Length: 446
Image 1 (tube, rainbow, N blue to C red):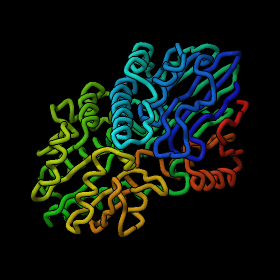
Image 2 (image 1 turned 90 degrees about the vertical axis):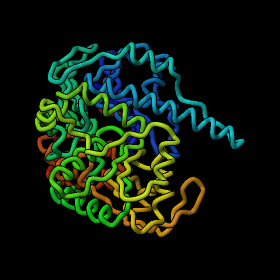
Image 3 (image 1 turned 180 degrees about the horizontal axis):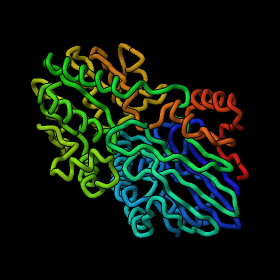
């Protein structure tokens, strides 16, 4: 087998890897670069017309976002993934298309060059028609490959991929989940492979103990809300927002925080939360038990989903304490920017980061303590209290990555910024593994 890494090399977005054997070309993920100004999402590095099949690890846009582009550029094959991944990918891709159209419209209105969307509704429909559900633990023959999906514990339906051909094995991690989370099952362990293609997002640091994160989160919520302030939480629409709602609901039930209005200001999150009811068996046993008892595990008492832009704007006029959850999680756009612009200057408020913030991005600058940031071209004073709760990450931390890779001897690191990849590589090499930090277009023999 021949592997070429065509994305997520030195970055945490743009996952895309091409596996070839006996003239058959299998693509593992085809994700969008997000927040990467140097990246051109139209440059795939290969001819989509020559790809025979695609396997997706999970539904996040940085792993699925260029699938419709493949079809636009001539791909005609199937896309395989778990059923939850295919259900969740559809609204995520529809939302991405909507944002691309809005960006182009805004640019034209300002007289600036407008970048047209990467793909259309028609391309998205072809993706839906050509997708094929694939359950966990059921090997499927795809060309000369024997492909098995196993639970990665990162999202509902997320998988890592084991590919076998002629006695050789490749393992592709996709994104590995954070163990000890309560809403999703823990990741499975991989078989010993001839080559393991692994993510390295948090390769340079472990997560703090999760129970400590929950204690701090409850304290931040209680202190801010009791003081009449608002808690602003930038969050990814898929998994993170629902997990935050899960714990707010629990804290309310335990009397650890006051019951206040909780707003989810994201139409995409609303759609995904509706899909959650259809994929209940993708969650942990605790979540499944709550569903069976007729309870919504992800619904605090005064939960409201906002839909229209006018509803979103009215939140800025809201009196009294409240929690506002909005996207995007990495502050690359979306309604969260309006809420930050309005609420960052107020010292009564708190901004709680519960996910990864790329170095140099707006979220990273706020966490690092910059007294003023620019949002939508306007200077905004940062007077609200700022918290970064890394324990909520949906990714495995350094120690969990080392544990997952414990038996692997030949490892290629992707999906990590270079400091994280270098740190993880040093630790893996210290115990005898052969480790490479993949470059874009680099080729490997499995």
